[in-house]
Image (cartoon, rainbow over all chains, first blue to last red; front, top):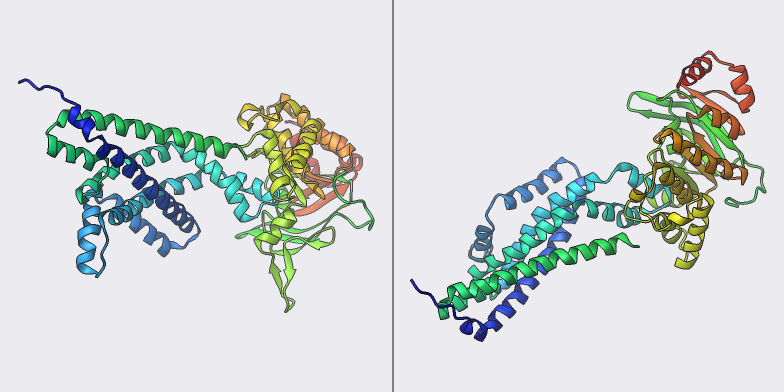
Length: 220
Length: 264
């Protein structure tokens, strides 16, 4: 079998991929940002709360973690609007789903991280007169951040890759752009040969950004 | 020097009838203790006798059940509400009062993400609200007083135990506390590092810092303290100048305690 590589049609449509990558990154950033708020918030609530509240948090976490993301995406986009009178586009629906998904994974990470900060360190912050909020911001959070950075990097990069699931809702992100070119030009090898390094480099970029953030945290 | 000039003659720390239980276990059973300005008081006693708990109560890391602790005449942990009922102060009030007592921990507990200098600066910036330049100059000054001027930029993980503990002392002392509380600060150190830390404490004592320390270093307690308190079963069992306490060994329990620690 002979297959002649021809990237010409890819370059002609490269705009689909560029805009696709941008949208993928935007989806990831927004979902991570909302996910971090949900995750950190619930981790703190979990830590301070009684058993019934903890059970609710665990229920959310376990539900999300044990259902495939694709299914959650369908459930939110097609399922909820059939039951409740509510309408939203693919992007909104996917963002909501991915944020909830991110939140569930991040709760666990933040919980483990908070638990890993030695009590004595928190006490040391209190002993110099830091208020509870100051102690959280200047002692617990940065100490926890250093502990959880590896798992955080994993999760962030995973979430970025998970934005590809949005293609099933025809959200024009990177994978959808690749599929579009694929269907319209049949240059299947070429398009994925271009898209794969795009994911790779962007994923690496996210890791690099986290490293920078770590350094930012290290200096007050 | 740290602390305010002594105008009143009142003790800096005044403890009356302090009681504290953990569940069914009564740890402190009526402690009375005064620490005057410039005093260096060593608390000795077997482990589990409540020494550390006592220090933690003074800077409100631990709450207590009965009695009172006053710092320069101000009740540390409780206040009376409008109806005259005793209420525990809220965390913000406690934070403000904690800044007036310095605490140095057995396991140092330096903030691992901050350099030595930043460890000392944090409280100056966030609690004392100093400008960066001022905080930096105060912190640098304290680091040189504990002999670590050249380690200002080092992270705790790059410092030896003795150096970490000296940063811990600088971090607490830089806040200008009315009293410095030292909780077995050499217990976690290799023997050859104990000397450098004790030298720093000695220097602070000579400079007039009021200190209350829990220690197992009997020789140091004897030489550096103005007063020794022997705590046994949650009470002050013997108290006096180091000379008398060690010479007279006025109490059976003290005698057996000293016999035990002298074998160490």
